[in-house]
Image 1 (cartoon, rainbow, N blue to C red):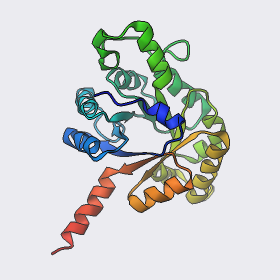
Image 2: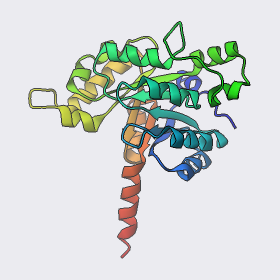
Image 3: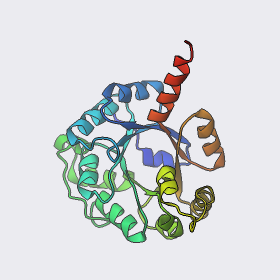
Image 4: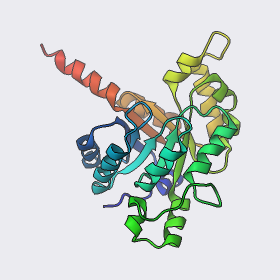
Length: 247
């Protein structure tokens, strides 16, 4: 079962709900699909960036018609290519501080003439060679999603220019990294987040938020986020602590 293109749903203005998942957790991928989530973000930045395990998670997601985005590490064009070849619908790249880094992300995610991603039809994305090259090229150019993460005061400063890079669909703020990187000389992180969100709304860039619970998710949607991602580790730990309270 192939998931419908997430990019079309994004650009139709749908509010989409997903989960950030660290590998290995194939059964949880399957459970997310059965529970009706719109997409899953497989974390290869803080999780193990194991391409074999990633392929297995993508296969489980495909069986459930669950769209997959992959969070790669900073400046990892090879992993971008492998994730997309294996069937991910898009990538999320951390630590985008400059326009040049955003351009490099787009360049790695798209085939020529938009970018320089190596062309192949013999992976899962090309149905193992079962799709005509022209058809595969057209589908990839139309349906690939590229998101950047702003996670530092430098990125906050350049947010408007980053959000305006052609081919970059949207931005997610890494609030934990932003707090860690901010000093007394920088904007308060809460104000920095507010300013970036205002810039995204002004530029028409898609906003993705990461949250720790249902109330935060509702607040993010109400505030203008179009994609909201649960941090599964945080929500699971909260649930386990709640269960432990029975004793």
